[in-house]
Length: 237
Image 1 (cartoon, rainbow, N blue to C red):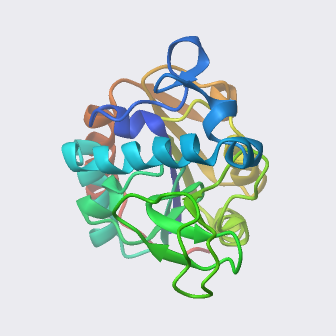
Image 2: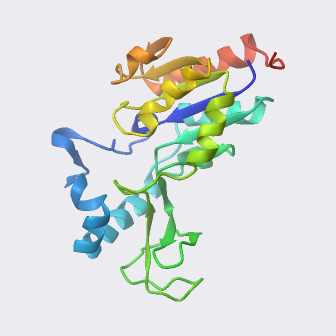
């Protein structure tokens, strides 16, 4: 085993106190997803959408990486083979734990996107509607979040990594949101082993070779220890 692709979802950050994407009643922190996470919502009520993400961005200061984030950062440091951590999460807890081989497929809270020129830039403060883009001057900066109906970031890179993976691991995901929910099938098509680490079985559990249930803060460090001590990487044949 040499090449590993890991998908992380809301379950890994929930233990740090970040709300999962869909809470009770299908709401996201008290809002309907359709009101804060679609292009139509942004066009209809930009003040609401910008305020929603401003509050979530500010809330990052009150949370910290947990043992699962730390374990994946350790794997990133110590694994000599190829590794790609693909996260559906828009928080920065993976980075703060030290992970570097990382791709945010759904965007990032600490980033702004220009709807005019498409440039992206680090952003850590409030982002009012009609904020001017430093690159092109257009009053078009918006949260750098992949809304429903928009193309996730890095799909070519993800597809390439999955095609060469020896192991695909899904951590803390519901298995309900595509295209991420289809990654396990893509990995299986290329003969990768597949493992799910989750609090409860996901909608796609049947596709995995193995499912381990429990808190991410317990399961992920144990799995990383197992990988680094029992499965030293070797060249692919």
